[in-house]
Amino acid sequence: MEVINGSRYLLDASQALDGEGRPWLVVMAKASWQIETRDDGPPRLAEVQRGFLASDLFEGEPGLSAAHIESDFVFRKQACDVIFKGSAHAPKGRPVRELEAGIKLGPIQKIVRVLGDRQWQRRLGGFWSLGSAEPFLSLPVSYGNAFGGLYTAEHIQSDDPKDFLAHPANLVGRGYAKGKFLSLLEGKLGPNIEAHNERVDSPETLYTPVSLGPIARNWAPRLALAGTYDEQWRNEVFPLLPADFDERFYQCAPLDQQIPFPRGGEQLVLLNLTPGGGVTPFTLPSLDLPMVALPANRHPVVLHPVVDTLVIDTDTMTIDVVWRASLPLSRGLHEIHTVAAGSICKRWWKSRVYGAEDCGCHGVETDDKDLAPVDTALVDDELDSESEAA
Image (cartoon, rainbow, N blue to C red; front, side, top):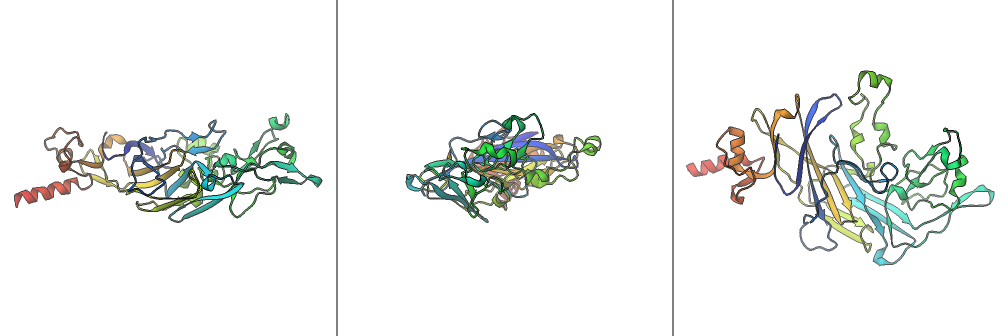
């Protein structure tokens, strides 16, 4: 399979299987744009592009810390995940004990409360409370700083493997404990991130953890979408997915950070999430990306890529955009001769589709006047021929 990239973005084509084992062509594109702190013209591509992530990016040890960004390689998504990676910043660079931070984009208007470090204290009568928050200038917005936690028998020097406690929605967080694990909280830090409308005041209450990053695959509520992997599945279905697998499992963003596929031009607003704090607006660039698959039968199929992942990274001040398109196959990738995206040479594309003479430009190495969006390249060629005949 030949992949021709006439866009300014990274491009990848691969095969994936659906729940019934049917092969699909999956084409992805990815680009990073610079977040400007002032309005000085249209969005510009970042000098350093992140590239496709083949595995998850963690803030610490993989599996034992919060994920910053998940792998780009999934089959498909039903909505666009909006993920934030970075820190909350005090307005005007002045230390605060507490602030609100959030994202507004399309139907998303999510605000979280960010607090400085606080320690759990045991009061008279065995009650627990959090001390006063320490002042801070910036603090990572991560599930590692949100309410949650995990304890094993080793934490209490027990030989009983049943001595285990975990917050089902955040195994890497802090502040959650009950029963025989409560004593471990003395002097330990509580959560730095809370829901803007709910205060954490008890370690034993199962508060819903809040952050702006991805939810791990083995956390609630995402885990429930993965399906049932039991003996019947192992004997009769493996290696395919179980019948009760839900494709919403592919979505890594919290439900309140999933939006309809953006088209470009939408206004993004960040509150206290960029250095210096305050409000940072950003207009999404045009997200139109022409894309065509040419099967071995030479009948072009126009693909319709959608933007299903946006990663807002204020550590690098960039926004990553991932497009994805798919096409069902009968047997495999050998059915596809060429995948092309962006603007390509009209004469070269005609040679691929009709078997005409190849101009030798490899699709993109030609003058701008000979280029056309791949989904209209044949139409433009026919119009040019009609104009010459007239």
